[in-house]
Length: 412
Image (cartoon, rainbow, N blue to C red; front, side):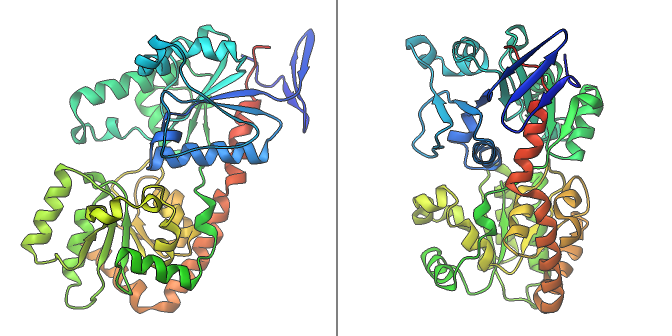
């Protein structure tokens, strides 16, 4: 594996393999694009944001998106972006097998120089093709909290991720916390891992007009003021802790909590607590509104910047995250954030967030009350948060990932 010998000019890729040098213009970069086309949550946002940023800031390369099946939900367009679907009856019928292994033939046919698995896995056997590979690992929560997963899923995740960390030429971790976990759980050499902080949709950084906020509030039936939670309703994300804080504040703040996200067993536990403590009018589950679920602007998160910028604060006291993208989205939206003082969340929030012990409903409640009642304090938080968010621009994310790409040997 050649690393130090790779030299790049601004427009031409030059690889020095002594005693000869190969020079060519641009790379053909392939991506596992399943989540980019089909996932509306964190992995999908990461994939779409990175691909669009690379295409914008590095148009000298060609980007091939290997998608196991057509999507009517998300699309990625551009002169340098090419969607690749499985062809032939067998590959279309067994699209999962195509994605996880058979896709190698298409990579070779299209002369792909390097392949990036955007969410924890790479095609089995890609290391035998001569095509360089990169894998992004978002978190190892299945290792830290296996009790929150089906036992079979834990085994599958463990096998796929361990394989990717072993056989990929380079591993991208989205936070220092994730890098530490990869080293601790899978014994991956530290020098093989690069931390590349992600960005979020640039739309969160654009100011939404008051007219647009009013339109969205009316469309969704929002109250004038509300706190906001965004994320899957699962145990480690701690929505129950927020509801307990809402109970503590029931006689002091008449401001509801809007919840964007869904869940199953843990969600029922949260709803039982809400019912037992007469908080039904304090917690609004947006995803339970049938008319909202049908809105394309909700499915595609197009209204989210307006929702964020209309809220009082983002409440995100998760027990553990790979990064915590809603924290970054809130900072970009100039929305105060209450988040946890554990895991990678201080990396995401920097000096711009209010930190709490996620196990303490009292601390969460104190933060909510402080931000609502002390507008000067909230304004300082917003200013610090916006400054910190500039470390996570799409351009900086693309630069960090391209640096990883350019450190790899290519097959041609």
